[in-house]
Image (cartoon, rainbow, N blue to C red):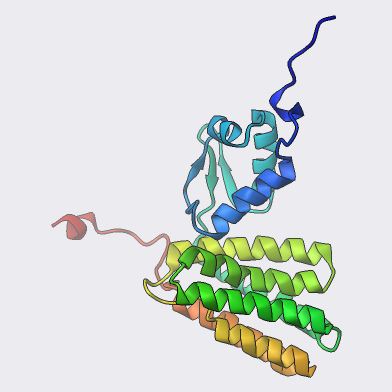
Length: 233
């Protein structure tokens, strides 16, 4: 009786499309895949031990969410948001996250508050150790965790996308040496949630996102004409 060799995707333990997309998304979050990075299907298929078809499906998911950009005849790249797009991301977050906090106020259990505070503590520890990748990941994770404890998977998915886009924006426009998301501001938001003060929580979130946006060099015009003679003189 002839036996056929199983394909890579049939092997036990092969990564799923969702797992691959989450791994790529995590690498974007931690700035291990900076904006403009080309994602080569063959190389990723070898890394994950799966077929190119599965890689293509995973990348298509992230392209649909704006995390990756497909350029005809060139390939798939980690997106590079423009200044205008960066501002739109923050505008979207102000609307979504304030509404989320209003919904959460007075509804969170002690266990959920403890989860938020644990994430903040881990972020503070990473910052103290100067572990920038972990700090960025945990900072974004705090905002996703707010959606997660709200038990709305659609909102959680949207927050993951917005936080990933924010990471791309920070990677492009971050002012060197500036902490983009101070964990102390997260503490204030959780304190307000625990008190049941929706107005204060929303105001603190807006102030927090405004602070993050102000630390970025978004005043730099994306399409300004360059004086090459001045640059190379």
